[in-house]
Picture 1 (cartoon, rainbow, N blue to C red):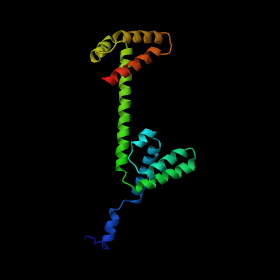
Picture 2: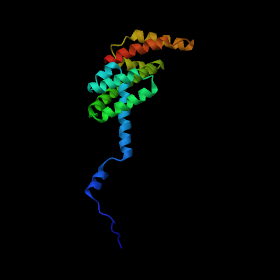
Picture 3: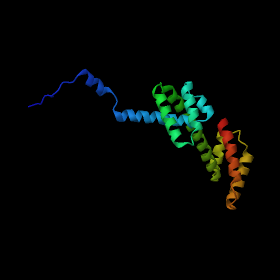
Length: 177
């Protein structure tokens, strides 16, 4: 025998079920505060690229000023979170994603230059030939000279000055291409 519910569901209860739980609301508030903290940590140039109203911008700038005052800073971050709950944060989140993706691209380029330098320093003639084929504008004599100097410096346990110079040269060469 099937049991019947002991009470009926009213329209008010249905609306209540669609509302986010207290835990979900808390997670949303914490996410907005985290976004506010990220805004405070941005440089002036990066902050100017974020679309926000003057009230929110002033709150972020004030948080920067009081960053060393722990309790005041914490309360200011909560205030920034409160201000963000009253606004559409989608444009701010999109701008932050663009900044983060630009940063990630920069890091990836840096790692590519490091890998190329390490490959050249390994002494592989094949890697050197491949490099010169990919970058025909590279100064062959200079690169070979840095490689010899780097090898000599490594043998003598001296600072890797030539490897650093090679890195700087590669970074300039590879970012132009």
